[in-house]
Length: 76
Image 1: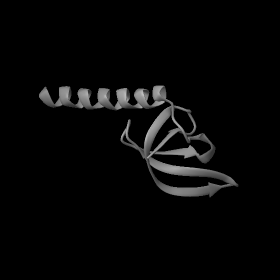
Image 2: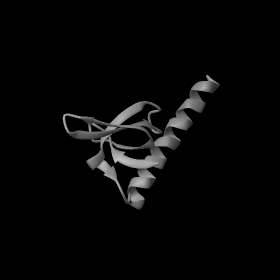
Image 3: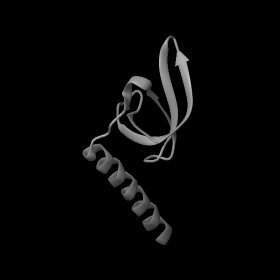
Image 4: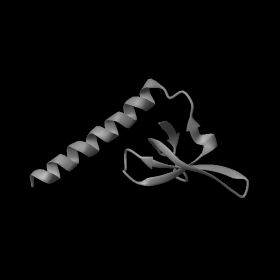
């Protein structure tokens, strides 16, 4: 599980790395973003080795909000 700033918009994301690749000597990771549910990419230099409590809480709140919205849609 990684916390990172996704490429190119630098938005905080969290997910599991699926693939590592190198493009023009720039290293990227492809991961499934738990917040959006989509495959995303990040620069390996943008992986957060020790996420702060604030970053962890921010990601958790975004995921909880997504779950809540999907449950509300299911009720309609």
